[in-house]
Image (cartoon, rainbow, N blue to C red; front, side, top):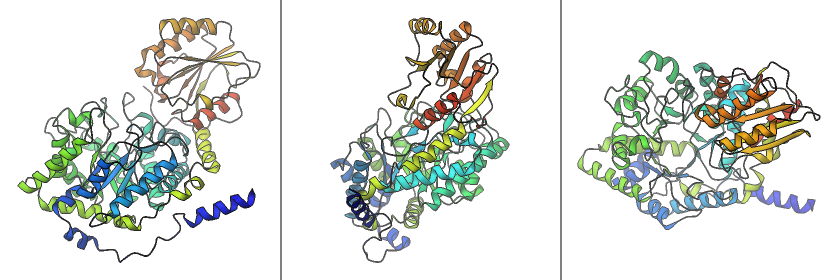
Length: 558
């Protein structure tokens, strides 16, 4: 058996990304390639699109071959992700299709794999705690480690672009869309950890896109649903919102993602998102901040745009404003056909002169330059790495690294009545509202005397009565909440327990730590900054007293 395993490993290494690709003809220069491209193919290069299904469908193949598509983005919601081997095979097929186009330009293959709550790959890969959890550790090397391992795993699957890190300063505790995706509310901390993450991605040769410029941290509307407002004045923007992006650019970020956020201090025109604003993209990013990498839009199908000018028109306006890569994601209510409509609109705008040829050449020139720098300019030179996937992703040592980050992040906010640790002899009730299908309940390992009771995401009056009955004979009650600041029913659950056992309640914030501010009388309070399996495992160890809780709160509570 050992000899057989060694033989398999040897074979896999022969096909690993370290193996040089077969010799190819000399790579053309960016200028020569740009000069040889038709207008139709240049417009295609500016588009990065979602598609449906786990394989190379006729629709996405047509986009690649007929329109010289610039890239794709993978989503589990549109069926692109079944398992790691399938994803690797899919990406190899996509690049092989791109190699058959006249110019043979490689594809950007992108994904949202931030860690914490926003990941498209779950099974078979290493899942890391959220960015806010990393910030709670206070350890810059943890940010580097997470980025390094995620980059290695993504590359093994044929993914070359990650839409991360989140560089927003979450200065608004009520922010409905950023929260624990951010490194916190302190601009210096966010800047330091953003730079560390970008540096690690750069060293791993993974294209990263710090987001969402000029800042989505102090907003009260989710841009997936509507148009948020960032009403910071210019001094606050410079001091708070811009600082992490400047740090990312100094760390050599090759790209940046824009926010569909209205910022009157930068562009006073009403209802004008930054993504569609030339004063923001050309004025602030290019001239003021001297950023010369790729400007990538957030998905043009999000409600902030689709409910306004519409996705198709937004594509033209974003390109005119200075965006280089136009992203079409798997947004609710949108279909791939809309991508073709946007392509035709861009082509028509270019032919009419509304979208200047110089703007198109500028964008495509940057796209080709980044592809060349990251070794994906020629699709034929991108090796098929799928044979070695099993030896590069989901490794035990990488999961251990994620667990160490999680353990360092667990934060004990208070323990006034010394409720911790839970002892085997304690009769403890653990109340856990369900979140979604990804609840990591299998990672929960409780002491012998503890009993788990699940409730719905919004516990009903009947569930409150059942929880009260179950808690009556218990020594201690542990109550988990997920962003209870926006969930009155979960607040009612905690307050019901506090009314029954005011000195014996342990409250755990599994989402944002802001829940702790809702329950100042809770004698014991912890924060995990997310519920990925390693965070739940680390929480269990902390509750049992087998690991310390050294985390420090990286945000201000209300």
